[in-house]
Length: 123
Image (tube, rainbow, N blue to C red; front, side):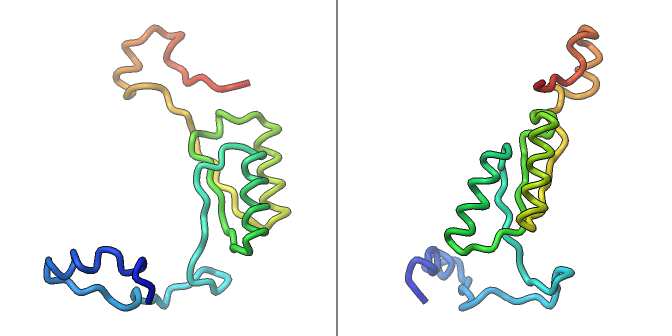
């Protein structure tokens, strides 16, 4: 095994822990029989998603999922539709998360003027 894959092994041994030669395996599988998945997080729009898909193909790296973390409310309807279509065309799962959320907790929001309570979204 290359030395760079053993990084930290000397520190573990100082703690009385030995590094395993290979990680433990699991009998668990995804519905298609796969044992693992590749997800690229923070894919914030269709242009970046296209670049991620193209690069994965170029490098022959399997890509199972992309996620957009800043919040679906930051995207236009056209951008959302484009990302869903790219995912469908490329057999890549697309995870779009709710957000952005309003600043502060619910209790803090109640103290703000009514006009400031709602989360703002990009047109």
